[in-house]
Image (cartoon, rainbow, N blue to C red):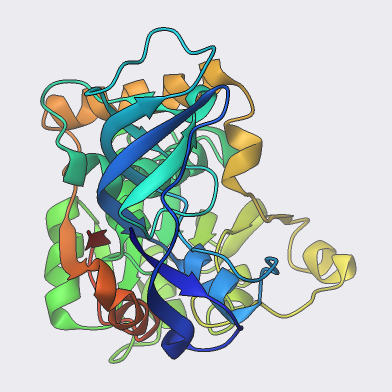
Length: 322
């Protein structure tokens, strides 16, 4: 079968399209024919070495497809069933090994492409809005990269919880997408300073929470917008890692809270995983959550997908389709 393989760390050109052995299921494992693989910033961190991974490896933690083989000891899943997943490396491939305990059954009405576009970023948006900082009516939040995959989903979930939403985007086109997702104030950061725009609209130190998936270029100014005991949620590094910070700075700026959440800690049990996913599927089928697939690339084009994502040239979700 064909797969995208990283044999040395570096830029997108290190993603090699190669022939690799077909996977064989062990006990408790499934072989899934991949219909669509989600491309996420964490994949670029693995490829670059920001998050170290033993070489060589096939990137990708998210996807959806149809089961072709079932290992020993598995009940309730059969060849032909459709499943998704958000764990384990190796999704940038024609076929993928999935542990049965991590397989997410896909219901009618949720296509493979929608599932691959929704699961990882949707779960991220879900835990950010419901657990990391549980939004409710009266809260004001700032979401950076509001037209990205997480940003669009997080905006919609925040609105279902009654929060007021500010987003930042890089272009007028992205501003339109963010407004359509429900953002109350959209700041095109290439034209307007986002800190000044927020203070003009809401006053100084007015935000309850900042959801920052951008990192280096936004982190410090975001801290200055928070109310006393507000929370900075630094969940990504699209522009590079945020600077190190002394706890005393958090004290001086209003006894702020700072957290760096990761998805694994919010889906620690099967029940927690399925609870989040079921809620997301319900929102999609009720028309309350729209999943935007912005770009689709062939499996051989994984390097181009990474270039587009890192170049901030994408909106919504980026998929690889073997």
